[in-house]
Image 1: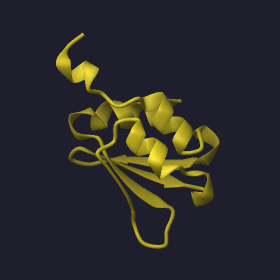
Image 2 (image 1 turned 120 degrees about the horizontal axis):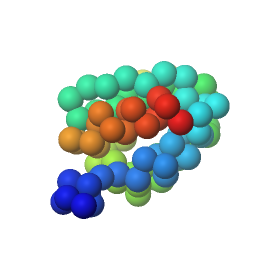
Image 3 (image 1 turned 90 degrees about the horizontal axis):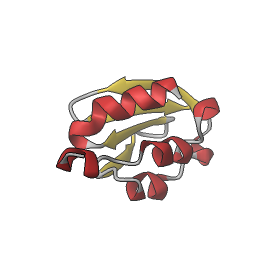
Length: 84
């Protein structure tokens, strides 16, 4: 296992903290950031997302959109959230 794998966020915990598949509406990818739209904001646990390895979690306005900063692992996290 490489150092980057050891520092990778826990995607299963992030998935659960977002309210799992039934709460995730859309996933997007940016430079080190995964954008996620959800159906029900009350099901999102921002503290758990940070505990799972995200360096920053931002809610964009009064909407249902979150920016989750995970650095070089963004592509892997986005893929996992879209597929499972």
